[in-house]
Image (cartoon, rainbow over all chains, first blue to last red):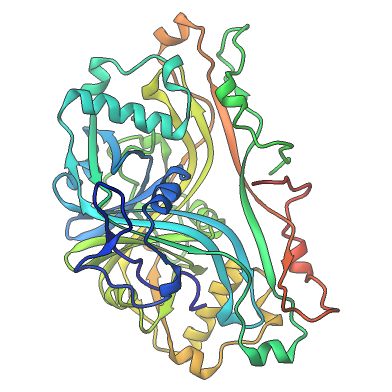
Length: 240
Length: 240
């Protein structure tokens, strides 16, 4: 069980040239060093594959973790919320943390302590900046929508000025970030392998998109767009 | 986009009799009230369906969010880690937050601002207690393993005293918790519906377990256990 994530993500810094990351004073990879990744492309890949992140913000002196959507533009992560959202307002100008995690499978071992998960995860720390420039705000909304629903922005009604006025956009530099990846089978103790008799292996976990469900209030004659149908996982299963 | 999670989870308290939850001083559901749930069974359902949680802990004065596994026993959530894990040690005796989120689908709307996600999420706040009682520690490990891999505990080697000595167990009361659920189709503005011409609907997202992959170092003659095969989603798709 020690191998269920366990310890600190490697906190790293990168420069704008996207060279491999170098350690910073907050770099403290003390465990599972082989799972830390320093390639900036791996950070981007983990973030780009996610749908929701978990935002940690200090509220009344203690941390609160909230699920929210996000988007990435280069080295900036964008978050958004209603201007009436107290949790998001509390984040402005403060140090926050954002994590994105994918579970790829469950690792069955011969001993309880070596059960594990295959996963890809990114953890970011940094100061949340309120975005005030209108062009950047507009772009951030586009980035967030396109992150969740690629190809949809250009065919839907863009935000009105009134809607934008009610929307807060936060930016987080992807400067101090870490990536951890675990893949492969169980790593059992030699004694347990020698004893034998216990199945060991991996049960893979996948996320699949089902068939689109058209809204009941849609008028006839509007086809499901190609960007939606293209997303459906081939041969989807019936679940639930 | 306001509807992408948006605002605070409803923070509620329940008593041991598991009656419907009543508000506390920290109860501040200011937005999307219709998505707040107060039935304790819904909290249990969201937690029990999850594989990883996101733990928020104060580290050096600012929050860090870390993915980790967990288990639930009644009204207690258990977390664990290596005794050498600084992040987990930092949580002991402090206020933490834990979130579990399931994304059930992406809601395509006629306007960018009404894009949304269908989701179930739970957010818990409370003080992390270090568990020192050996019987409770043993049980917590069993609960965590059985949460991730139901039915596996009894057929694998249990933790040794040495392994347990290297393991830290934290308990979090499920006293102050909130649940939010969104389901169903898009809620577009009447004007956008009247204008028409834009597809609207839901793209469902499912998690499916693939076929088990036996470890390369397993001796011949050991079958995949029934608790593993029973987990495989019928007619799994080929992904990736």
